[in-house]
Length: 258
Picture 1 (cartoon, rainbow, N blue to C red):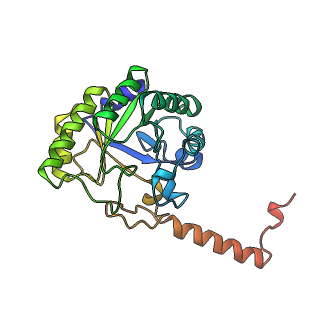
Picture 2: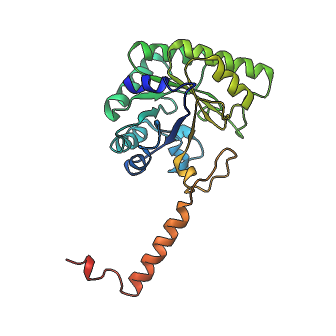
Picture 3: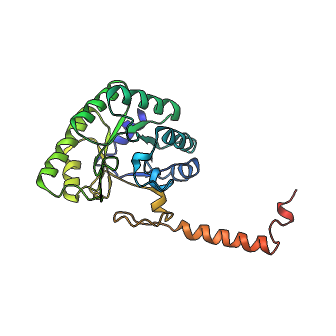
């Protein structure tokens, strides 16, 4: 809870930096630079080439989270609860307890803000499970082409109300995914908890990206993704050099032999 309290203090003071991780090696490299590391169910598409996050299982999330935990010493660790693991209060509590116990994460994240989800989140928080919310584009529930949210006045009112309701339930933060920029600012201004944008706006309290997208490993075409590096080229160059040295008998040289 101390990490969550320290995070909440940053609202209106400094921007919060968040990234995803699916393994110890990546988590270890980003830990010193970020405030939050999310083990996202986006691993379904990023690592397994699934067409939807709905295919991601609880065991997959737990196994990757165990690895990520080993690479974190500083950041707040949050784990996505995958599709069909929180359909009712008892199922949600059972699975969230399992995730918290086995991964030693600091919090879990649930998608949505409708009445049913709100009641489930209330039940989790009542039972000492810290929860991060998620509004806007909800990958677990989307059908067809993904589009940004907040275009119509009706949708704007609904999302703003859902954010306020989630705040009242006790979530410590809300991810706003693909939410129209003015609405993102309005939500951020009107609630006291943290908003974390992904395809939202710079007015959110923090930002999150998929690390594999950020480092140029996925060659993503998503509009809100900016590549800050090109790991693909680094990998290709290293493998090309390795191949050359193996074929020319330069590797392994005497230095690398027993």
